[in-house]
Length: 602
Image (cartoon, rainbow, N blue to C red; front, side):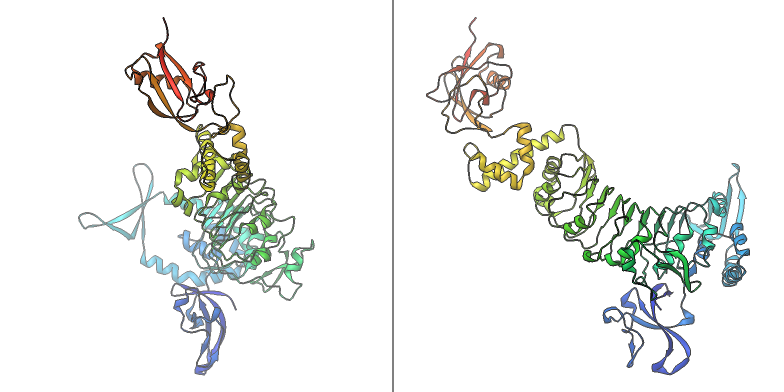
């Protein structure tokens, strides 16, 4: 039961094996299967009143098939031969010599296929002038512009075959979608792949985690394993003590079960894949309970990719203090995550977690993130963040890169606003959405965020920028924009003006609140304006030199001949405007302040 089969190109799981009771066919063996592609089924396991099996959720995803017509898949080395080799490599034959049964079964099963290929296809080999071997396959053609058929030339395949034939040096192997279902006798795979480091077995016919445990226990050099899109049954206990109870004690004596031999091996599940550093488990319908049961087999994994799984049962996620201590990357893309608190509680304490990928989930906000001391890269693309407040929740992280693309707040506020705010709120970040922050961009973004926080407060409280309660703003900022407190200390208050001060110039900078913008009146006593007040709206932090340049063009008098004086209010004295680094705010400028224009006496 629960073995995987393929029939007419479609995969299914065996739920029943036996005769057809509703048709009284007791001499034939039939299989009741549940299709991966549910709409291929005809019933829910019950036919004419006979219940052979039950489909998931009672869906009509089941069928009855003759056992002799289905394929139970290939052994791993068979898939290797069928995909990559024209002839059996010498090393494989040598290893088979000690496994007579294996050799006989292999040659018997595939002799027809090999003979058929020989009859159907003939390979012609030539050597060109550059001594490069060229192969022509008489079944491989393409059509020219003149509608003629031309045989395809294959260059360099002899070198590829030579490398593949030397299985001892083979380090990377992909057998995706090759209908691999079994490993063969224990030890045989390990004798073939002595130096394999990267193995891809995606979308095959494995049916049990114990098959995976058998595999990794034979390959001590294996560093990266991908078994994505395999549909594995829940871990079995085989009548022994419950596996969960043994995970969390330090006495893991749960043994690997070898389906080939039909018995347990003297190898514990715990640590059987301790050499595996990258584990890819994408699209396998896993829950956190499932993952909790397999973590002990891979205690030193550094990269764990579990995208497109059903990871909503965080209450079932448990692992020992000794597990996942080496984890550097965790990819939880498209796992129906809606609460970041679950992530922080489950993984926030891991000492080496550097990359956390949470793309394509249902996150709308974040709590204050205080853990994840080693986290340097955070990806939150394609979530449901509509407001930018979540950015101040991650301000304490020492992130190098942050990705927040394709969230509703980008459409609402614009890419530039979101980028500037992220730069300002996460002071350590160097890369936003894949784009590196430039030298002056951080300062510009921080000043922008500082001013926009004030403006947000003014709008909310319905007050003017030149008359507001500064202490109330500080309390508001602590709750909504905590980073602003730090930025005020760094850049000063951009809206410093004290409305109780009527005017008057003081030589030192006044520690009163000044306006960001003010409208001044320029009175020209000597130029072409002739005593006619001319209003101009300027920023309070505008320097004296730019003011002189603007007035010089306005009154058509060379800048070196200008003498400016200011009268902040009607009651205030007229004061000469001098000083290389002075700004309008330094002179106490207010709306309707007067600037008098004269010529320097000779």
